[in-house]
Length: 190
Ligand SMILES: [Fe+2]
Ligand SMILES: [Fe+2]
Image (cartoon, rainbow, N blue to C red; front, side, top):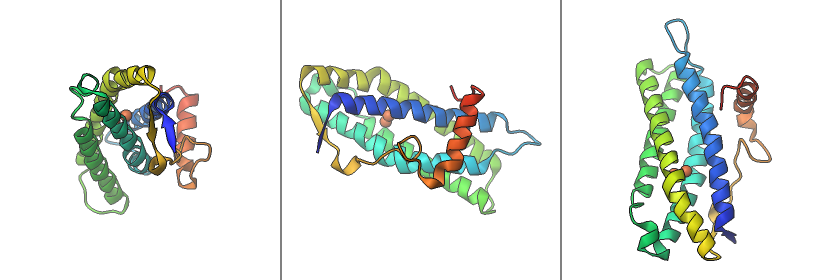
């Protein structure tokens, strides 16, 4: 099944808006943490689950395919984008590490709270930088490719709906979705 590049780019941009909501929620949890206030580790676990089962497993591989299409279209399209795949690997490793640390907190295994907070802040920083680079460079080149030629990509193995923002929210994410709605109502997910 081939999907046209323009609609893939539209989906990728939607994913970025949704990931921004997740990162803002993480940011808020950390900002509100203090001597008397623990982060909501269950919420953080749900967010990191989403980031690993959807962003790392579906969103980033789609972007890798977009990069491969740019590389196939010629050096002028792909020059300077070589880091995209290794960036995705680094983000995946940090995301899995953070998810395991949060799981460890929730199961009572000794893990320093400061370590989790530091890794969360690193994760937020890395993802925001990565997404803005993609939006300002990778996606714009792919827009040009989509205009130049009727190009499409085979997404057969990546045709997985978003488990939170898709038409049906996976049951395990209903608590996370409720948090997102509350934060949107209070205007804090921006
Ligand atoms: Fe990416
Ligand atoms: Fe992305």
